[in-house]
Image (cartoon, rainbow, N blue to C red):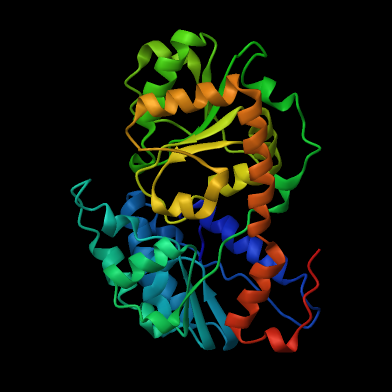
Length: 353
């Protein structure tokens, strides 16, 4: 899928990472990444309608014209409806989460097109999902068959394991006298950025030079008086994301919902302590390496961050637990299991560094 046109960089990265790593496995394994395109004559349409027309009509036509392959892997469940147009011996799909369905009452939305897409899940030979929580949701909210679902924990990429980071990179965005540097994500409503702002407001009374570094733009910031404490980081390479992770003091992640919580895994690999909401998916991923609070418990988040910053013994303990926990997300095992799902593992020798 053409996730660059769809402005879904995380999905584009997910697909490209698979291509990059699968190509390392064996010289006889031929892998390609199909990227359909939008006809230029649709540019007059508003973005949302342009993508809907493309996703549910033009992309299907383009996929239908492709030659037959042994294995086709759709890396995003929102494109499950293209399954009938895929010419492949074996069809695989990854389901990341069912957020539009699970949160539809909270945000008063009815995701009809999303529901239409996921009705096609059982037409795939195998359904990969990224956590046991997402597997539970699949069985609860869709018609997906249990024997078709397999959980594969997505590893973070090599850039986040690089200990030789640029310590001065963060100075492009903040000066050195910041007492606490909190990393956040505010890409969607369910990320609960309002709680992060309240936490920063409270922390600033004790640590006046505290700040938030947020990956991406922040919409509707109600705390106008805190603008100088909130830095919106631009889109950057994962190498530079690692520079930010390793220069921050903690990742604050009070999300209401996650299918997985990839930023937590990235932080873990960058050895950055994570203070998150106590929702099942993140506790499944972080284990005892995480620090948890209820999503709306501002007081708890403030106390945990303060303890992390002021208690060296606690901070060192969390760092040690992070190093142990990240071994759980082994890239070699992930791709070995993926090739088994593809049905080609027995024919190949894994050659990943």
